[in-house]
Length: 484
Image (tube, rainbow, N blue to C red; front, side, top):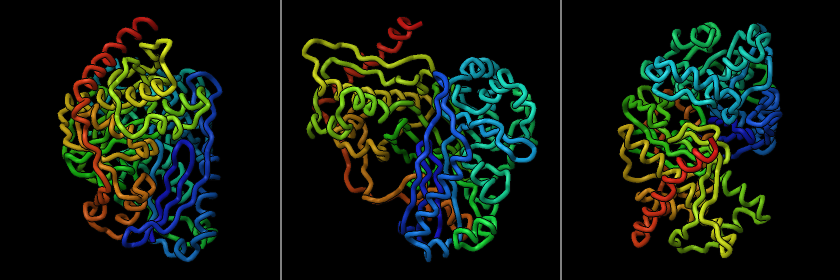
């Protein structure tokens, strides 16, 4: 048996698989986000431990014998969070999360130094870890002076599980401190934020052993002490391992709270000007690129809240047949945008509203707006040297066939739907735990699921979608001027 632990923003998931990679069982516990000021997003790391214990306790209650047979553990987690510890490994303040934008000014200042883009291959986004530490230095100097270690969220869980300060390449690539091409910390970039390598965890590949389970926890859960814990991965790279998106040319589109267009690469292909993320993959000597939109299903959830209709009810009103765009456009920038704009201040909008505009038309516009945001990411990936021929859909939003038809038509690419199963980040983490424990070939373990169906672009609407996308493209600069 192998255990995958995924620390998300909204909860922790624990997933058990056997040696044939069949899912045996899972446990889950919820997490809340604190937003004490506009643009702030924080969590208490103690809540991650509580949620992890609850998720594993659920597994122990339902599958005690299988949990006792675990031979390897893998970790996945939300990226970019700044978890600050003192010399005694005590948490100094709430973790500043990936979707926190308070450090936008610090990010812009770091990004103006060409060394960051040259070494990391990425823009310094406000959500990344390095500008958060500069903000702490400027705004909470007493706390900054006590910082002995900076850990990413899943690596704080590793510290609790194993007592080790260790991270891996895929997650660390999102800090703005990693030399992504060389796969190691950059002392130059750390010094530019008044830090050094002693304050960073040691680094391994995601498939390598990175600590072992402490005896105290093993005894509590009825497991064997000394179980190896894999380096693991950031959540998107872990999802890619779960989906088998590990070889050049493979790609997925993730319709979660945020949206990701993820492409695996066999070499390092940075192009920060495109606002594409270029990160190390969880597998050795591989990289990946991502276009990231900050409000994917969050956009539909927002419409659901103000309309009083559930997301499923809203999409059901559209039926199954893809409709031509109506002229009402939606920009899904409810909390700013990353790819391609790197704009934390921009906000969403509807345009083209009229007396006859119905709730159904608004829903259609929201789905199209997110689809066109993915098209922006596809264009950005092309500028970064990556051409896609098809994508696989994952995430909660992929349950809507209408939405997948809109995405396929907006991208001009077939969208594959995997056969029923759990192929997300926790599954990918369990796969990495298997590799670390057994030494198995990562490419033989991280295979793609069978395809249940393929959604082809609707050829009859390609021209209408192309025209609507061009209208969409013109709206960002207009809204940018209006809100400047």
